[in-house]
Image (cartoon, rainbow, N blue to C red; front, side):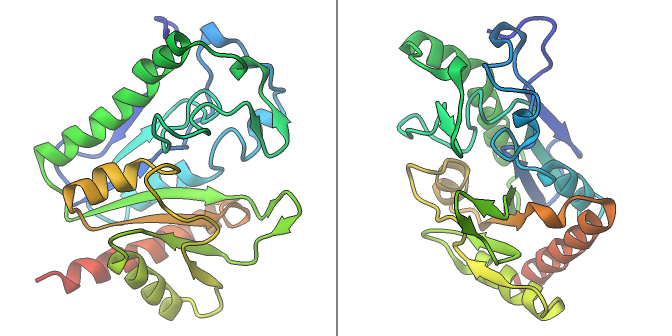
Length: 248
């Protein structure tokens, strides 16, 4: 499906096979393959949270400057295919996102779904798996952002720390960042929860490898400028160092 005019879906930064922390950014990009046009979505909507996690890639890259880490991020929009969803998820290729219709995703055949999976989803997760196999990280941190208002619901937490079967790292992140910045409202498993259908990186790469992990969700109005991004990169670096220091 991708042509010579399209970039590689995977953006890798850091030392291949090196760095004790593996960062992932599933929703970092907002590109659409040339073959799919604009998916029927306006340019303005492609700037919204429905197309990407605003500020998540910038935060991930800033965190690279603070800790020894590798970063695997996705260049293409979550509207093309969501790299944090598995094949059974109804949101793998959304036809509607936050009340915005995506005409280019309607009535896709299994062949069309398979083409997007093979071109974009699979290479991203193959690279994560390869990095884990090449040099097992001490910690997997999946970086996301969320919109302050979803539908009619206003989200008051500044950040959430998500996990399912292995909550210890998420709990420690929340406690450490809460102590460093007590003015912040922090939550466990909000504004989302992690499970085997609605998520992919945590259950497959984290739990599947018994690898300590956390999925971080930062409210995107805090990632609108370099100062906000630096602040959150520093806070996450503090939490990462705390987890590393606690390792036997």
